[in-house]
Length: 92
Image (cartoon, rainbow, N blue to C red):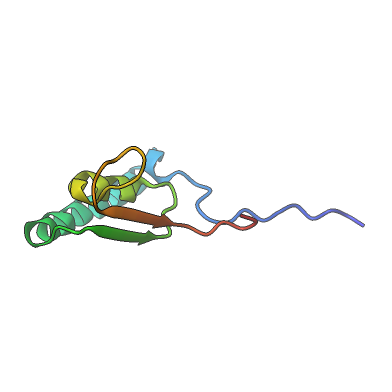
């Protein structure tokens, strides 16, 4: 009987490092809209906890951490708030 190769799941393609000009434009548009939303949120909210579901590569989480530094916690950070990251991986 033949052994079946595992099926890759999740993000197996690095959309952030793409050289495709259409994809680069889409990513710039996404991050422009995302940064605009974060600007609006940071003007009125100081979160103590942030929950991101489906972290993937963590690029979006990194931007949130930069924008809301008071929502950090862990061994590297000494604050009262925290950012909780969750992602599901097959076989994990």
